[in-house]
Each structure stands twice: as C-alpha cells, then as structure tokens.
Image 1 (cartoon, rainbow, N blue to C red):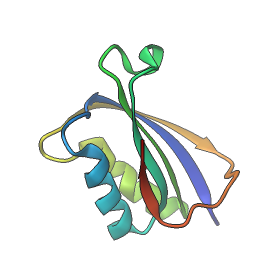
Image 2 (cartoon, one colour):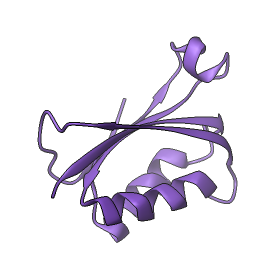
Image 3 (cartoon, rainbow, N blue to C red):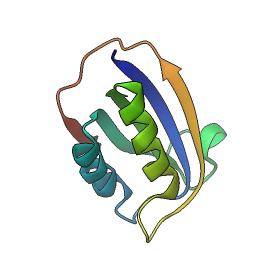
Image 4 (cartoon, rainbow, N blue to C red):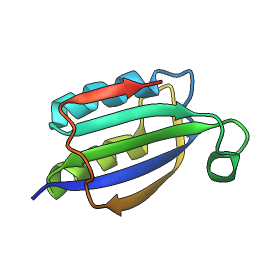
Length: 99
C-alpha cells in the first residue's frame, strides 16, 4: 500500500550535496517524490534553512530511506528529521530535485 511522508531535515544540509545524495538513495531504495532546499521557513529550520522532502512508497521502503536520511551523506550533519505521515494527494513518477 502506498504511503507518503513529508520530511523537514535540519542541520548542516545545504551546500553539501544533500539533495543529489538523497536522489541517489531514493533510486537505490526505490521510492518516489522530491527534495528541495528551503530558506524561508526559519520557524521550522532556523536561520540557515534546511531541506524538505516528500517520499512515496510502501512503508518498508520509506522506513529504509528514513534511516539513511537521518545519517545523511558524509559531508553533512543531520541534527533532526521531522517526519509527518500524510495521505498521498498526487502520485510521483521517479524522484526529482526541486528548486
């Protein structure tokens, strides 16, 4: 059954290749959705911004990529990942980096 999560990823996750790394991990794990940098939600991320993602897949695959994202690529420092389970409103084909 298709599930969806929205992630708010906080820490040193901008300008370290986090979005490209996430896209690669999404392809390996087999999930759909998107990832983007966010600079204008200081109430969520603080003054330095963060990364937002929507992931769609079966729950087992979502849990697998969540574990990877909580660690992040070697050059990043993930402080916190806020996870919100949502009802899918649209279906995503593949995984993309959004601006």
